[in-house]
Image (tube, rainbow, N blue to C red; front, side):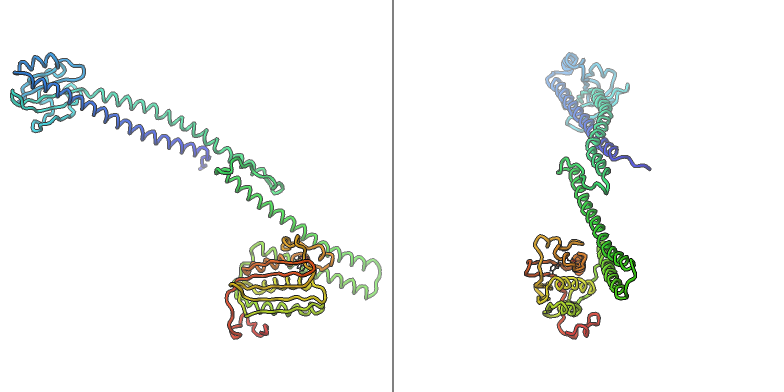
Length: 479
Ligand code: ADP
């Protein structure tokens, strides 16, 4: 079944709420009116009863009372009166009660105070009757005053029919007002939907209007705008990443093509072919490395690489990395040293952490001139493993530092040195360090050197070499 629109649902809820409160108010009014009118009538009836009783008390003899009562109480617009003796003999009856007997009235002679009750006369008239059994000089008498209940019933009926007219009318007005109000309240939502609907991946620079940032619609619009902003940043990032990646792939491809075309342009010597092929192999290796790096990053982005929670012997990983790069540093004339206190253990994936250290250390060696030095220092401080890679290389100007972890970002000077990197080493290092629950940061001074700091939460420290059996690498670590 098709659900009603929000506007109609709001209207109906509003109408139902107004109708319910009107109904409750109406019922309460009728009950109250009935109660007040009956109370007032009862009070007046008792007053009249006291009047005729007073007359009775002041009269000397029944005949005098009957004369006085005939004069004062026989004809009355609203009230009727009657007086009976204890054995039911009629002493006085007003005009409206002629031919009636004491048995027509509910009288409890045992009670001495005034009682009121309703009664229906033989011809159908409904009366409210007040009775009082009194001892008088003529013996015990029952005095009663009565009045028709019709005025109260009529009054209540009038009120009921008035409510009957007002209720549907007010409900109708509430429904109309509710429809108009909900239309007005939902107008900004409609505008918001229109504005959001007109957006596409190509025009994410637009924003939905925020009329009042403090109301609910304004908050929704603000949230929507911040979502669009995040989308815009992500889309820009993806576009830049794609453009940079294509550019990086095109460069070695163009080099391969040029080399091959040059080699094929005429007959060449074996040596020339060998040279051309070695260039091709170099470029293909670079392409392969780039493909691996891109795959690595896209896996990280897609969240395919779940955070691994294996225990890593950081000291062992550092020793392995330094060992691997010792050859390169020696051939460059750069002194490489490692100082590791204790055997700290971190959580994560050993392969990824080794890759991160390798990227950082490769950079340090790459950007340090012959005669310089690269030091790696690892210690545990305040429940953190601090690994510092320090070099005495060319350094980095401060304006580049905040962007170093952006993908494909390279500092111009290093580019000109043709180091062969694609600007993905540091972003990959950061992704891997983060996957081991750590952080990475860089400080540098141009011409003095660079320091890369990796902080990892320490799990514990291995106390003796005997415990060092992680991944069965005790022997490989050489500690
Ligand atoms: P690449 O693979 O091109 O080296 P990275 O992401 O590893 O890319 O580094 C980005 C840039 O940061 C490099 O182009 C380089 O200029 C600069 N850089 C990184 N490490 C160092 C360092 N130790 N000394 C000087 N410059 C560095």
